[in-house]
Length: 153
Image 1 (cartoon, one colour):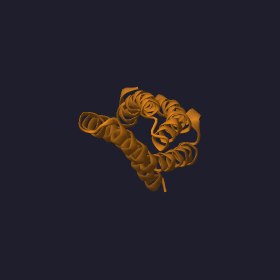
Image 2 (cartoon, one colour):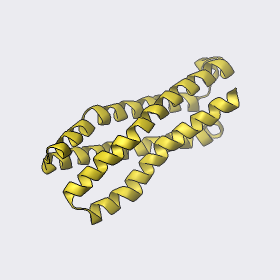
Image 3 (cartoon, one colour):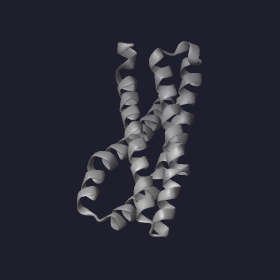
Image 4 (cartoon, helix red, strand yellow):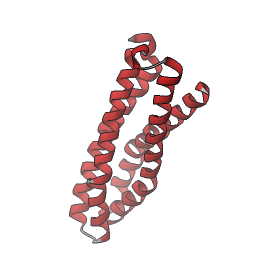
């Protein structure tokens, strides 16, 4: 069972962090350089509407599999290394940032696009961009700690 939990855990992390990397490093610069604001804002509202359910599923999977591995395989948090604690607390930070994005600026972006309020949509998208950039950096740190932390910490 440990192998399945680890596999699901890694897939969930890859979907979340990989999706942010693609959106931030590939889609964002192209959309910004080639699309007018109304089209760009509508594109992002649609992209996030498709991606965010995957993030919710990834979060649920990460929490369930992570806690399952800690308590079923390792015997609790006292038995795991510092790298696991760093992953957990960094993951909590990422989840909090994502929930803020979802419930605040993403809602404002959708409302702005629906009402064609492009300046408000631009402000919401700018806030989302910053927060996803922060989450991407944290996510890359978590992946680094997950893969090498056991040997480095």
